[in-house]
Amino acid sequence: MVEIIMQYGLFLAETITFVIAFVVILAAIAGFSSKNKSNEQGYIETKNLNTEYDAMKESIQHEVLTKQQLKANAKQYKTDDKAKTKLANDDSVTRRKRSFVLNFDGDIKASAVESLRREISAVLSIAEPQDEVILVLESSGGMVHAYGLAASQLDRIKKRDISLTVCVDKVAASGGYMMAVLADKILAAPFAVLGSIGVVAQLPNFHRLLQKNDIDVELLTAGEYKRTLTMLGENTDKGREKFVEELEDTHTLFKDFVSERRPQLDIAAVATGEVWYGAQAVGNQLIDDLITSDEYIMTACDSADVYQVTYTQKKSVADKLGFSAQRAMDRVLLAWQNYSIKDRFSHK
Image 1 (cartoon, rainbow, N blue to C red):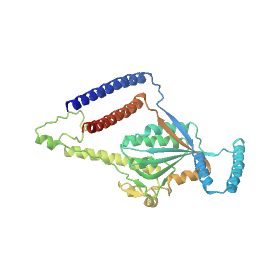
Image 2: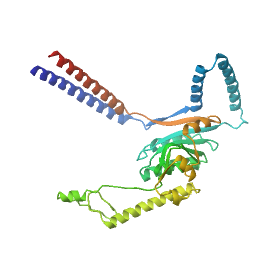
Image 3: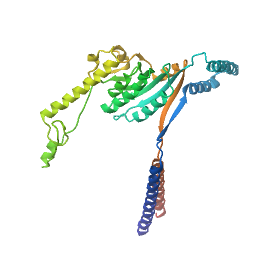
Image 4: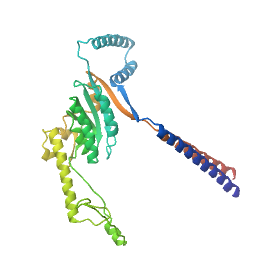
């Protein structure tokens, strides 16, 4: 038994030494990296979706068509490709429309706006009024100021007279719908959730619990309404009334924003905080048509050059080493587990 404890202690000491050494090296490299990193935090990736869909189509054709059919298709493809090249080199012919596909997957803080703003900047550097931006949007909403910024980013597209289409496959509610109304067209899947034109706020209050345990909380402010409701202090009717007033003001701003961009809406009927499925949303004009993003984008490929534009965040040295450290620790723990099992069996 003593021998087992000594072996365990030795192994534990070795493991701790290894972890400390690794952390020290990690901190040193991370510190050096932070001093020498450039301003460039990520990069734009562009993918031609026409080419991607053609490749998928060709893969299926090779499995299901005969050799004669494949030969005929290849011949037709060469003819079409020559025609496209000729048109592209003819300055008298208006160039083919371009569609740029962006994705926004929103959380409560609209964190994806950091990537969205860079993607829009990249697109606006080349897009012209004849082009289109397609935003595949998914968000249940969140902080007012965060989604206000996200909506403002989309407004940059509209100010350049470039068509904006928003596709909703799952949900665009509250702040998500605030973004959607910037579009020239809002398209949604039949069971996508839309609407929730309302404002909500909630917070717990621990005042009675603290009071019961003889704990006092002092809240000092300058300004009558610097703090209306608090989690720890005693809330007053006056504070509640002011808080509700602020919610109503925000709701009014939200309704005005939506009404200005979709004047066809009966705002009084839809700005109740309710949500509707896509099939219902068509009837009350929250959206323009029922169609999934996949169907719309594939159809767009017939008449336009379609590009997926994505801003990819670079991983810092610290992030990469942190991942390596986690893997190293996993291996150490696995080794110890195997060692313990072997040791238990060897002492029987």
